[in-house]
Length: 100
Image (cartoon, rainbow, N blue to C red):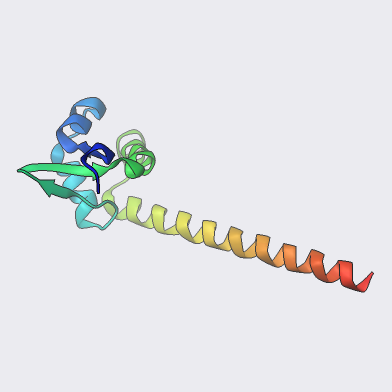
């Protein structure tokens, strides 16, 4: 993975005004993956939208890490179910075209 695709955690701590322990806890729950390179810790930039959601959930709504884990699990489940529904609708439309 290129260094340019990584964001240093200390920069995120400063920007979002959160403690480093916040990111460590997210990593412990498997919500993010922290990479360590040359004594610095990084996260991939693709994780930034989810990180911002997690920060808002924790700071603005007071949701703990277990709650954040549950919410993200449910959001993944919703996405999967929406994909399955869309697939079923497409198959139904294809069958309707055959029988009409």
